[in-house]
Length: 168
Image (tube, rainbow, N blue to C red; front, side, top):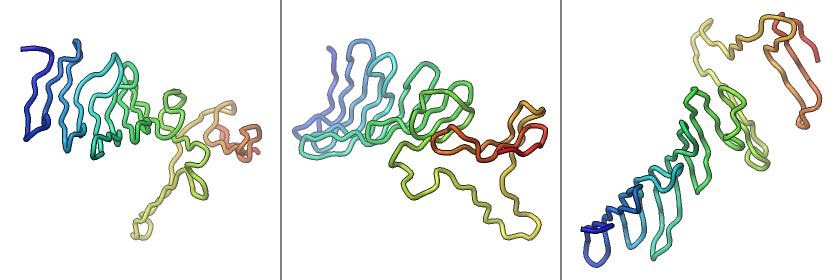
């Protein structure tokens, strides 16, 4: 009876059921290192963490988190990479806590060096059955169906309005 319940394998704790206040955790150890933590560590935080290490070092390799109310996050190397919000919005990459779109991918400086941020490939080989990208948006001259801007985000290269008019 107490705050922790430990299951031992040889000389090190194999599994620890940790009371940790009122949050509770299950910690699985391998080679004297934390290999897996399941449990809440704060009001918002890690739900499941995976570690890699040996000789007493613990490197946070991946995790499934609750980064904010009504949100699910996936992280690698201690950094959140993907967030799914309760309204169905999905964000990948950098600045994902800022809910500005249903689906967005933002690559921080250096993350997409000499590569595309997104690619769409349809490798269907059947003739007359291979389509690309459908954008269905806009219904008036003040709506936008497609907008392409420069890096500084201060000039439009291409804009297709909701009424079909193409401007730049």
